[in-house]
Structure formats: C-alpha cells, structure tokens
Length: 78
Image 1 (tube, rainbow, N blue to C red):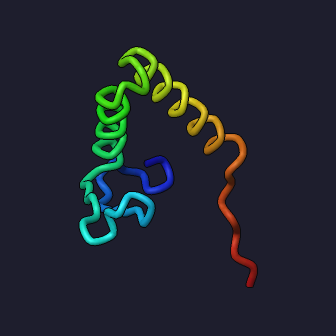
Image 2: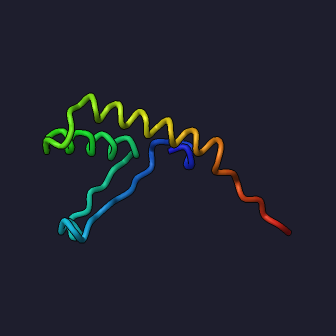
Image 3: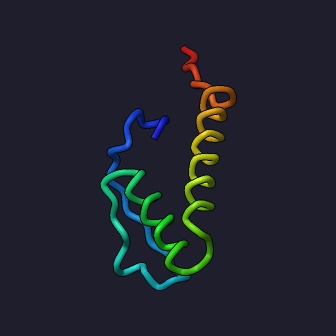
C-alpha cells in the first residue's frame, strides 16, 4: 500500500497447493485481502480476533518502519 501510494489496487491470487488455480480470488484493495485473511484464520480456529487484530497492527507498523528506514528509491544513472 505504501509502495503504490494507495490501498486501491486490483489483484488476484491463486494457489496450486489448495487447488484454487482455476478460480483465483480477486480483490479491489489490499485491505480487502487482509480483512479476508483475518476472518478466515478466525473461522478456521487458528487465532482469536484479538490476536489477529494485534498481529495486523504490528505488521503494519513493521512495514511502515521498513519502508521509511530501509527501502530507499533507486536513482537512475545517466
């Protein structure tokens, strides 16, 4: 989201392991995919909602720090 400067980016994902190659999941926003992953992990009994929300917030903070402190634009040499 930070790289593109917007949450609204249409993309599709698929998995050969799960057999979803023929029917990829398509999202209009990065946050739509993240929301669905949170719900899926809760419904599967992998985590409680609080753990998912805290984990998502922590991941967002780590990504922001990494984007601001480590990933720098590459200049073009002429």
